[in-house]
Image (cartoon, rainbow over all chains, first blue to last red; front, top):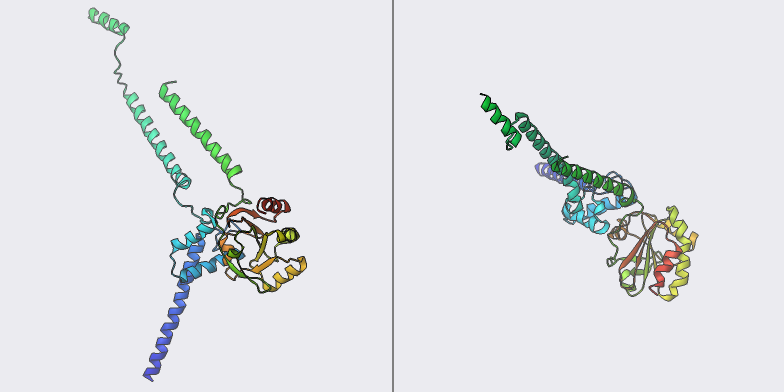
Amino acid sequence: MNTRKLVLFLIGIGFSGLLFGSEDMENRVREIAHKLRCPTCQAMSVKESDAGLSLNMKQRIRELLEEGKSEDEILQFFEERYGEWILRSPKKEGISLLLWTLPGLIILVTILILIKYLWKKSRDTVGIDTSPLSKAELRQIENDLKQL
Amino acid sequence: MTMNRKLYFLLGISFTVGLVIVLIYGLFYSSRPGEIPSAQLQKTAKSFQATTFDGQAISLEQFRGQPVILNFWASWCVSCRQEAHIIEAAWQQYGDEGAVFIGIAINDTREASLGFIRRYGKTYLLAPDDKTGTISLDYGVTAVPETFLIDKTGVITEKVLGAISRKTIDSFLSGQL
């Protein structure tokens, strides 16, 4: 009786392992498919699309995962065949890097210009003029002193 | 206007003009959904094996030294009907001169493909892709019909998205035969 329970228990563990294993595999397929653009309907990801080519791509992702390929290797596999546009998040290099960093750079430069402007304005408000006096001003001062 | 102000003004103007140019380029010139760039152009065509609908085993390698017109099609595709006669007529004309015409059916049932072949009288090498679409994925196919023109050295020189014209086939083969 005990042996029978043990066997049933082990079969149960094996079955749930298979079940969860396959669920995990499907989650990974979905994750990777979400990062790829549907070649036929480009506004959608492969994950969302039911187009024939997207279904093939999902199947291929599954096969590549079963072969032990990593996510990066799978994304590279499709990039080699379709080009970089197949990736929904373009790589942060070359012109793409410029596009990624440009908004940040613009904000940074704007802040720097603003700081410089405000600093200059506050300095001007204090009103300390360090420029040398003109001849007329010197003459005026001398006249004022004589009158004292 | 001081020198600094002039400089800032010029910088601002240059930046704005630059941004507008990039915007116009991006909106009207760089993005053409109908002209998806192929990563396979000017590269050696990926080798593949297939079994034709009439049971003949073929491999791209066996046609090295001959120009190949590799066409991806499906029976449910409207544009494939449009080009069916064009490809068959070109095959009838150039086949004897050494041009190779291969049609790979993708995402299609065998019965539907065979029906299409009979209806349009296609006689060149016609084979189904496997269930995973290995050949079409290897060529980065985005839709059907899509045709790859492979020169005698095995390099893909052109990709045609949509129904191929007779003019394109003639122009390609005139330089190859």
